[in-house]
Image (cartoon, rainbow, N blue to C red; front, side, top):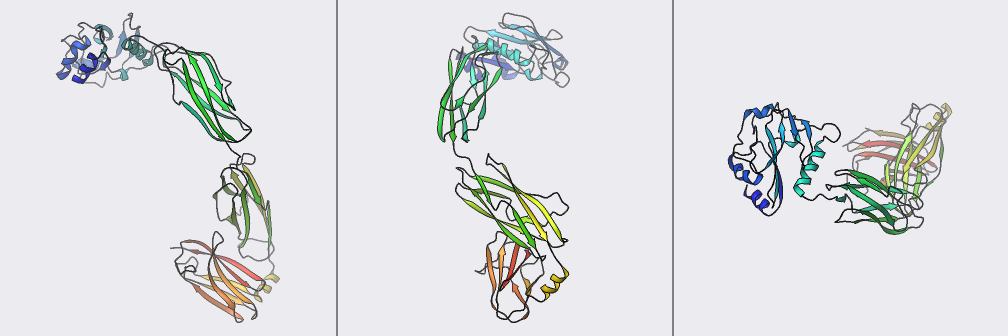
Length: 455
């Protein structure tokens, strides 16, 4: 209680609402709020249905429904006015609000909760009532201009593209705020919105600031708002923007067309480069509307490429289980290049398998497969060799196309061979779970299959 008393004696103003005014330690506050000593608790507090204000020079008339009446089971039924002036009462004429001007400080006391009032029609709202409260407590109502941001930053922008930001202007004062003029300075900054308008207390207005420039660099400016706020006749909002060259995407090749004569996994390389001034961010999505959705895979779905950099993407074709014919789809690269935010790479696969081909394969080198698959951490890879003079290599690659380990690099005898991979790399370090590819090469022959290490 003493802190409130000290605050008032220092010339400040206080609004106080309480269901226990006049009881206990609160009794010390009664003379500071102009309240008499006959304010006592009463269960009739639960009967409040309406809060009504008489029209005075200080407070305009209002009548609002009260929402807590059926729930509250304690409180002050009626305030007793001493030096203070009653200004609100409930439907049973019990005094609920008293205001007091001591000449050194001002107070308002209420035995009804402000939050329990319900907004009525236009002008009969809690916001309007609180404006009256503040107008009395502050003594000399003035407009007050306020903005949430004292600086608008456009951050990264690209040449010849128009950008906009919104600015909210508030009137937190107790008198009408009159905006006389809004002007702007600085290369590239644009203001074509309202330049004159009025804001009542608690009202706000959203205005729009633009920026567009055709040369890269750092830019700054000011938005100057002139008003009748006596404390801030000119409010200045700082403006800033950085203009850079946009990311620029280039893909090589621009389309992919393959013909497969076996059901082995085939891979192609797609190179994505960025010749722009900021990072290129991409999302790769296979757009296949047919019933076959698993014959194409990419090793990366999301990537970020620095200016001047490039990234190689592996594209895997898996014809296993498909019939002869042509299969087409699109690889859509969603990216932040403003000139082509959706880059489409057409992809087609022609599958041509014949019985004669099967007979041919049986007489040539062949990568038979691995077992078990999936495996943890050991699998056996089986293959056949028909040329004794050919150098045979068997290598393991990860899903990014990087070689993990070489298992065979030798001339082998004709026949079927098998070799065990224990899931380690060249340094005998265990590899992580995931998809791996094993590639057999023998002379001009090469074949690749997929396996899964599952720990």
